[in-house]
Structure formats: C-alpha cells, structure tokens
Image (cartoon, rainbow, N blue to C red):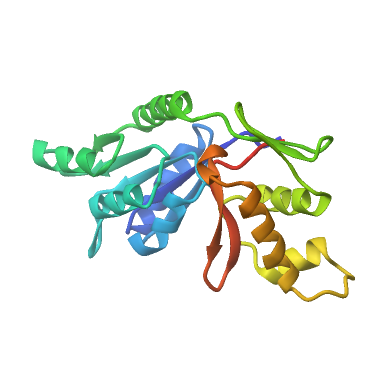
Amino acid sequence: MNTQTRLLVVDDDPEICSALARGLALHGYAVETRNRAETALADLTGHRFAAAVVDVMLGADSGIALVRDARASGAQLPIVMLSALSDVDHRAAGLEAGADDYIVKPFSFDELAARLKVQERRAATLRPAPARLSPAARSLSTGTRTVTLTDREFALLALLADHAGTPLPRGEIFDALWAGDSRSENVVDVYIGYLRKKLKPASDFGFEIATVRHKGFCLDGLPPQR
C-alpha cells in the first residue's frame, strides 16, 4: 500500500523542482511540482496535498503573494517557504503572509523534511475530526449531528468524497449513478440540491458541495470518511 505523503512543490525553475522532488521522495514524499503561481493556487486551496513547499521568487510572480492569496481563499495545509533571501524583513513578510516556516537556501533535505513533518504534526492536532459516512445506516454523522440520506444521496456524497478537491463533471456523475436511467443529466443538480439542503449549515460538517464553473461539483473542506 502506498503510504507516501502527498507534497506540492512550487518553484519557477524546473531543475530545482526536479531536485526537490528527488530529495524529498527519499524522505517519504510523493511530490508534484508547479512552476507558476496561477497554476498552484487551486492546488494550495484544494485538499489533495498534505503540505507545500513554495519558493519566494517565482519568476515574475511572488511566492509571498501566492501564499497570501491561498490563505485568503481558505488554504489550511502547512506551507514552508524557501528563499535565498535571508534578511529579517523577507522572513517576516513570508510568515505574515501565512507561511508556517521559512527556510533559507542552501539547506539540507534532512532539515527540510524535519521541518515539514513538524508542521504536519502541528496541523494534525488543530484539524477537526472529519464527519463520517455510514454505509449501513446511510447516514452522515459528526459529534453533534446526524442526517439520514437516501440511497442515491448517499451514493452521490460518497462519490464526491472519493474525489474530494477534484471537480466531477455533471455527465461523469450521471454516468456513475444513473447509467441506463431515462432521466436527463439535470437529475444530478436536483440531488446536489437535496444534499445541500440536508447539510445546512455546511460548517456543522466541515465541508460544502461547491459548484466549479465549467468543471462540475466537488467537496470543499474536510471530506467525510467511511
């Protein structure tokens, strides 16, 4: 079973990205890289990665601005910034933007991995327990609330949870849950509406069902577990 921790590395230099990916893989990380701030923002605010390493200088972009935008958009994963800039003002700017740690180049991979693991442990202690889906009871439960779902509502929520952070197109959802049904794909919107109504307020469950324009639906927040 693959137990590697998923890590996002953001640096505008492909060679540095490759070196970071290789070095961190030796410390148990499954690394994906991005070279531009605009392509990294969605990954930072999604829920695919356990942590991120972001360089301060991203070509014409600013890693500090990227981190600030990610935090403003609700990103909660640990973020460690890397930089050749060692003065106090730059370190303070990175931390004030929302970085959890700031490492000055050159550094050792042992140190970077150790600092990442410290931030992951810290985040785990602050993270609320996820809601739980019960296949037997067809229900979604937290410590304080339980809602009963129909079979189709449960199947839809479970499908979204299995792809948390990744938008699923309406047609793909329809094919997975209503294959052979004579109804139109609009039935997906109907059941999304049923779920949203039952799961109000979304803050009680730690996630909401988001509509991603031109892409479909996805869970935004801490996905429920089974």
